[in-house]
Image (tube, one colour):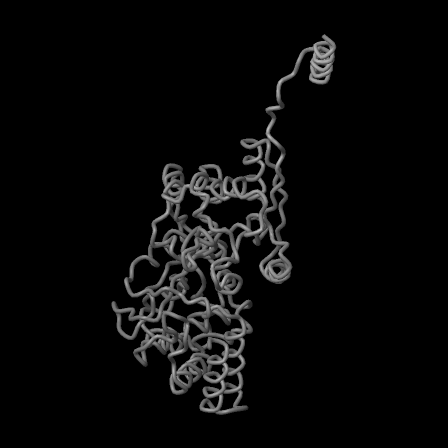
Length: 419
């Protein structure tokens, strides 16, 4: 009898403890736990603005997820990313560069394997050949957003004024420089673009790739001598300004009749010039003969999304990544700013809105024309390698060293870097 009284008291206490403020018995709390995700990217003000709006919409759809954003311009982001990856404090979801997979995930375990999130990330919207760019061994370290290649943009209005056609060959560019006679440059480009431009020429001239599939150097000292002497020829013949002054020779300024840069940056390069009435077109990938661009041109993901391997909220991070890649909201807000999206869902949205046009889309179509475009090796974007090449070019250009001496230096140093 005594035990029954004790049981009744315990039941009463349990019921009292389960009562809410209204005196009714409450059930187990079904409210989802609030999850905080961090998300980082680089970009200009326009990218920041539309990305923040996309995050606002994502949070509306997922009220249990709070996304904390971190963003800056490219150089600051790169420096900060180095620190965060080294200290394990990177964002849950992050925009990354293609080369960083090799740098931070040599064994494939530096980022979260996104294949494990196939229940929340729809990977079927992206062709497997494109997804392969995000693979490291058996791990899917990142999802590519769009593809990218160095492409030449020509102010046809200026070329027409000299009676010149759109350049297709290396000789066309040299002849254009002779005709323009210093009044305009046929083309201008940054240090990275010049490095890749000279690689294209040298690969066509020597008949081999600069690196093999594993990233090992295959160029010889003679090949690097060809590269250096070609760069100096371009400067001395006034085909292009020195790369250090490329910022003063943009399409919008009218001093240059052409520019080389990424497909994903086409709008940035060309918008003002087009608004001012210039007829801007993409040129064929330069080759030894018209109609035959040869090899030496490379393609890579424009940008990629990755998830931290230390995230405590992998499923929610996957939801955010899927939204950024596949949602109609993000597709509409982003447009072609990062390039033509690889996601079939995103492209369907843009096609329905009539947004698959303009110079950015023209550059995308040009990139997809030649079957000879090769897969870029991450080492080709190694900043130390590009700096070595630029410094060697200047040593030869200003006659501080011979092309043979600097070619040997380049060969030796790049071989050390690539192993």
